[in-house]
Each structure stands twice: as C-alpha cells, then as structure tokens.
Image 1: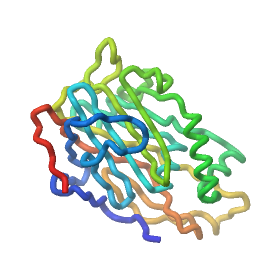
Image 2: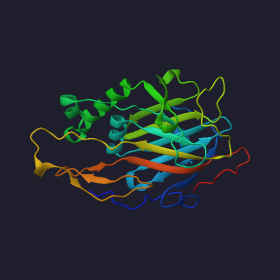
Image 3: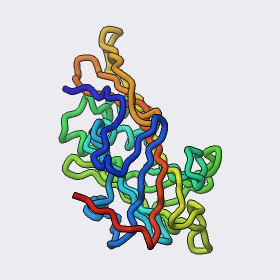
Length: 271
C-alpha cells in the first residue's frame, strides 16, 4: 500500500489555491444554493478543495449571515480518529491560527479495557467497523463551544445549539462532516465567529493523535513501525502498524486562511 509520506497535500483546484509552508489560503464561495446539512455532501459541488494525499476534501460557502463548512474523507483511519478522539473546528476572526472560537463535535469517546480493544480498527473486519461507527455516531449528541485558551463556554445538545447546526454521517465508505455557524452574534445567535461577509478568517481542523490499544499478547516485536512525517501546517504524520499494512495518522491539524465571499464576489468557474 502506498505510504502517505508526501511533503504537502496536492490540491486539485490549484489555480486559485496558494500554498505556504504554514497555512493554506482558500476562498469561500458565495451561497447561491440551498444548503441542507444532511451528511450527504451533495450541496458542495464546485465549492470544495481536495487534499489528495489523505483523500480529504474541505468545502467553504457563506452568505451574509452564516459560514457553511464541510469535510469529507474516504480514509478510514481519519474517520476513526475523529470519531474516537473528537474534532474541533477553530475559527479565528483575525485570519490567523489563534484558537479564538471553536466548536468541538464529536466530543470523542473514552473507553477502556475490552471496549477499547473492540474499537481497534486493526482488529475488525469492514462490516463490524461500520456497525461500530454507526453505534458511536448515534451516541454522540452533544457539542462544546470553546473560547480563547480552549475555555469551554457551553456544552449542549446538538439540537439545542442556537444558530449552530452540525451533521455527521458515514455512508458507503465516505465520512461527511457539515457545519453551519453564524458570522455575527445576536440575541438569536449567542455564539458566532464575530465577522462579516467579505472578511478574512482563519479556519482550523484539529483532532488529537489516535491512541491505539496494543492487542493482548503483543510484545516489542509487534509494536508499530514509525513512518515518515509530513502534512500541511503540522499536518499528518505517518505510522505503519507492523504487519498490518495500514497507515496510522498522527494529529490531524489543518489550518487555512479563508477569504469569505461577499454578495459582489464574482462566481468561480469550475471545469
């Protein structure tokens, strides 16, 4: 199996994507369609950036009230990492990589003992893995709103988060994460990024390193073999499980400087 040791992700839409050594520069698309957060990803055509190395795509759409963000992947290890360790989308109104306003969902799951071993994707066939993922997803009903210094501003049921809408779904081997968040706070929307359409913001996708449980009876000779490091903005490292032939992701860390669209922004043309 090809090892994911590429130095940088390759972007399909490179004609308007500028890569730096520390931060991507992306553009949001003006909302010219209805966006339904259903975990299917069908509304994001023409508004996605594709990271070839790890089979991740990120979508960005906004109007004058909300930012819509999507992340999709067919990489089972990244999906497992997100479901097990949680995912935080950070939004920096100053366009940098400051953890100013974040939304954590899923929160992750802390198991131990036999449950931990059962969750280890290296020990499961594809059918059992899909069943486990479905059960985990159904149990994840809360989100956290985070402020500066990762202070927890609120923990709430996903359905009760005013102005914030999240949907996560895994179907047909594709993991889809969709987020809707207000640009400006109000009485109706107490939690928001604090910007307006046309501004530049920082967007980060962060998930801690996946902690794998060593199967019973495995000794030093069976320990995972370290692979190459790489990724975007501190990105993904690599670790191959000895004898398994699967790539183990390190911390998921993708940061981008995003130019929000305004009503006067010309529509992008995609081939």
